[in-house]
Amino acid sequence: MAKLHYEADGDVSPERFIAALTDFSARRPDWWPNLSATLFKVHELGPSWADVTEGSDDLGGIWARERYDWSEPGHVRLTLIESPNFRAGTVIDYRVSGRAGGGCHVVVDFQRIATTLTGRFVGAALEVVGERRFAGELRETLRRLAAGGPEAPRTGPA
Image 1 (cartoon, rainbow, N blue to C red):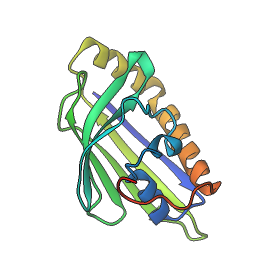
Image 2 (image 1 turned 45 degrees about the horizontal axis):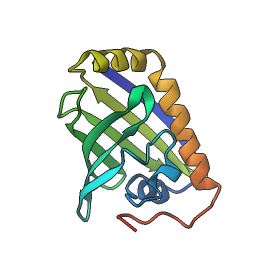
Image 3 (image 1 turned 120 degrees about the vertical axis):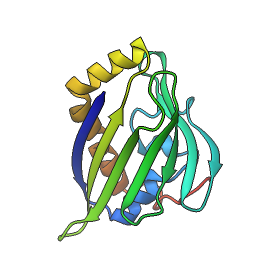
Image 4 (image 1 turned 135 degrees about the vertical axis):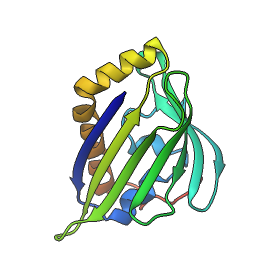
């Protein structure tokens, strides 16, 4: 099982970060490094949840269909629904809080249980470099959001 914990600080409000995390428009790949536009698909969207397939082009495409739930303030939970390489039911939790001087602090707890040889390979690689890589990608997302660009992302499709 791959279990990761990583954190990052950014110069954007917690609300702006959560808005970007729950922005399922076509510009989603603009905010999230390593997110493949070709693997991204919104299946269903509710007022505080979404059913989404997304992934990375790494190793020919590693994807997962997940249910996002942001009904609890400051918390976004992704629950795995389907993946060719990992067991359904595992979660990724984002906890987002404000910092005293402004900006936000993001804590991520990530879990995957492999069901295939590819999944075991990816899980082993994540155990070695996952925290550093994902924390770097999270810092890049926070940097992109702080740099401005388009106005704060809206929740839901464009």
